[in-house]
Image (cartoon, rainbow, N blue to C red; front, side, top):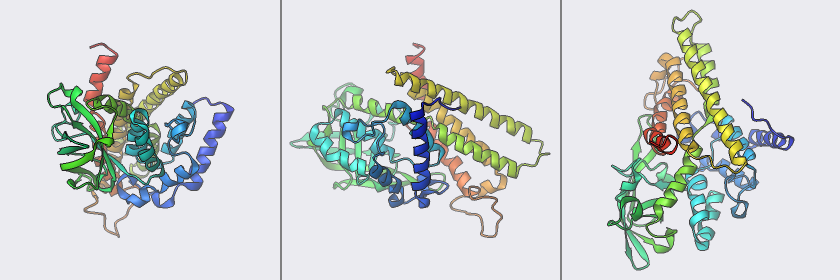
Length: 393
């Protein structure tokens, strides 16, 4: 499905395609860039986009944004996703950056926004805790005021790429006597502070992507408090809305679906009795992608007219993640015995590998994608949000 574009927007799309083709770093073109690249490799594209002035399409121009229209931002998202370009670190550009320029004071904007834009500062997210995942209002990490500092104690978990981070934005409890949402604040914490410990969590696919973060008597300057004390829940909800809206992943799903079709053609014989049902499964997924894309295009059209998309963020999160999980499941089934190869037990050098994306990379993607319906607010929670906001239940 193609968005009907004006001549100006069509020219912009062509410019984006050419720029990606000519400038995306070759060393970033790996099967699983989310887990296979070093920190230095991961920021190469970020720095290229920063130099071009294209690093923050969602930001207002006064803070370093592009000044693009909603349609142009949609085109950018689609084209980079379809090209397989690893997006800039979401925790920095998509999440904490907008919180800072929306709710932060002028000193905070001056201090933090330049490093986010340039890629000099790598951020991670300190939301989830043991026992406080989708129910973020139950966070237990405490921040006690001590003069010009807060003393922070607690334990954050599932903290993505914290091993690389310079800063962490945290939800902390500053009023234990208030009701859950009313006693939370939003703090920015330097990861080099004494008392911060990062412990790796190795996921089922064998990668080191997430971590435990322990905070023990960490002194955080009060000047690193965003907005008002005990108003952090407002900022947290604002941030999560930005996170979930980006989870439709149409371009990524389309790219992986096309790859799946090639694998099926290469791996499954025409007389295979399971081929017919397999093809039907692929067709169902393709129809679901088209349906989600149509919905996204409607939302883009509404936003361009100034209409708030409402619960669309939750819808995109549910459907986008579940579609991609189904694609990785079908791919894993299609590669057959090659799916037995994992990072810890790679295929031997003399084993026939039918293509660069087969084998352990497909298996790891299948395993890693199981998390998609959990993080960013589990899909069960998102269904509850839709039930309340749309159906009034």
